[in-house]
Structures are given as C-alpha cells and as structure tokens.
Amino acid sequence: MSLLQFENISRIYHTGDIESFALRSVSFAIDKGEFISIAGPSGSGKTTILNILGCLDKATSGKYYLDNENINEKTSNSLALIRRDKIGFVFQTFNLIPILTAFENVEFPLILNGGMTQGERTRRVEKILDEVDLLDLKGRKPSEMSGGQQQRVSIARALVKGPELVLADEPTANLDSKSGKDVLDLMLDLNTKLSATFVFSTHDEMVMDYAKRLIMLKDGEVESDKKRG
Image 1 (cartoon, one colour):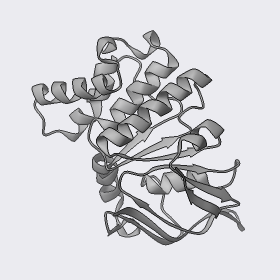
Image 2 (cartoon, rainbow, N blue to C red):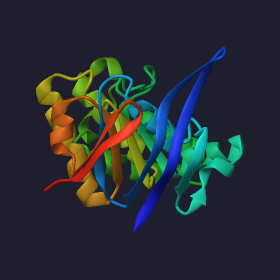
Image 3 (cartoon, helix red, strand yellow):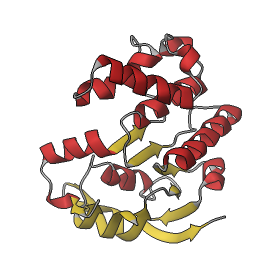
C-alpha cells in the first residue's frame, strides 16, 4: 500500500531572472515499510526531494500525496502538524540539544506533542532507547557520547512518536565506517521490527548497498529506480 506519491514534481529556484531546475518532473511512489536510498552526485536533487517529502519545502509544480492527502494544498500550519505527527528526521549533524541528556533529547518531541503523562512518556522513551541499545546511557549528554551513540539517540528521537515516515539526510556522513555500519544495521533492524518507512538521501556507497530500493538521480531527474534483494 502506497504511503506517498510524487506525481511530476518539479522544483525551480529563481535568482533574479535566472531559473534553476532542482527537480524535473519526478514521479515515484513509496509503500509503507520500504527502506530506500535516494542517491546521486551533488546537485542531483536528492536533498530537494527529502525537503519536499519532509514538508520543509513545496514543489513548484506537480503533486505530492502523503496518506492520500495533497500536500501542495496544505497551509504552513497544517504542514507543521504533519511534520510533528507523521514524520521523523535524522540529521547528519545529529542536532541534539547539548544541555539535555539522551533521555531528555528523545523525550522532547513527546513534550512538544503533548497529550501524555510523565509516566507514559518515560515508558515510551525507555522502550525506544532500549531498542537502540542506549538505555544504560540515558543520563549522558551528547558531549559524553561517541558520534555513533549520538546518531542512535537521534534515531530514537525520530522514532519515539511512531512516525509513518523517517527521513535521514546523509546519516553516515559524520561517522567512521564501523559506526556507520552499526547505525545502518540498527535502522534496518528497526525497519523490520517497527515497519517504519525509511528514506535516505546519500552519496555513500555503503548506504546504497543497504537499501532495499535505490532511486538514482541525475540533473534533477530519476535516472533509475530499482528494487534489490
């Protein structure tokens, strides 16, 4: 069952009278539970796709449907609610709050969402920290953890609210090869256990190798779209 669809999505940026195409009539659908890498050289459009998927940017033309809703028709306030309720983000620079512990960083989205007691939040945070094998480090601040551990906290924070879609922008860019492999193993495991849909933008061959589906971009267009394994 399709979670989202891109229908002839184009994104044009304007600098004075100059038009620059970041995307040109891109179309694809993503089913629930997929594990996808969107790859290509710098300037191919992969980050633009991730920004549109994450409701951080809007297409210039074409249609984007998420859960059968036309995202292009949504107001800024509606898009903020969709990001809050349906989408988890994993950033290459981790983006953890330095003064908060691992537990508090993961809890933060639940506090923003509201509607839970402290006990409910604690149970949910500890469960996801256990899933990413960091429960025993829940009291540590980011500066007291390795890069790989910080990325695991970032993944836990993205997943704690149970999003339908998890977007990861170059998730291994700031990790050594072993830590990168560990993080990818973790996300693949969570993809299976939680049926979460993962979409990466990357130029890392290792991330591409892990993907169950690889969408290759070139000059803002889909060059190939292949399921693997």
